[in-house]
Image 1 (cartoon, rainbow, N blue to C red):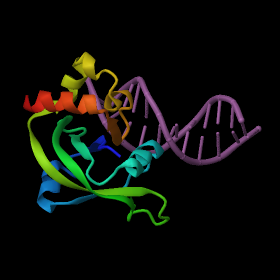
Image 2 (spheres, rainbow, N blue to C red; image 1 turned 60 degrees about the vertical axis):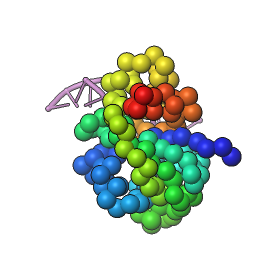
Image 3 (cartoon, rainbow, N blue to C red; image 1 turned 90 degrees about the vertical axis):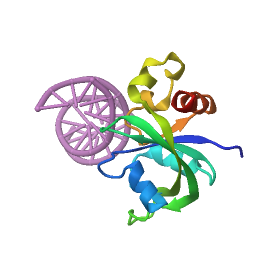
Image 4 (tube, chains in turn purple, brown, green; image 1 turned 90 degrees about the horizontal axis):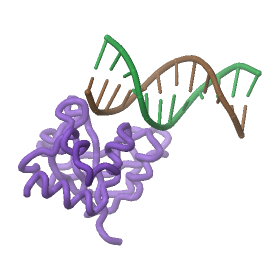
Length: 137
DNA sequence: GCCAACGTTGGC
DNA sequence: GCCAACGTTGGC
């Protein structure tokens, strides 16, 4: 299967990009939303994900890669929820803010905006390329 | 099975 | 701090 792209939200107060870089690898667990969990289950090792800071910053700050997929959430005693592990790839030269994303007609259908409460969202290859060009172009 | 009430998340 | 969006719960 070809590589897919994702967006993972985190409140930097709870777990920031810098925390991920410091640890080297982070487990993405605690997701208790079925749609977000389905996204987690669809992830494959090697997929890439934007790391988005919600609440504080409200911007995409970096790129992470899925290092382990199809895990069971260790924080779920019933073992029903999914988790993955991620590693930082690189920080974006210029973070892309939610404001920029909302203001751009090319990103009008992005799941991040349409389903704003989803903690794990899908990014299409077109959206991925476009956001990268905003950040590093 | 429907729907109102409530809780949570996240933007503003 | 407020409110909108969405999910979940519980009464019927």
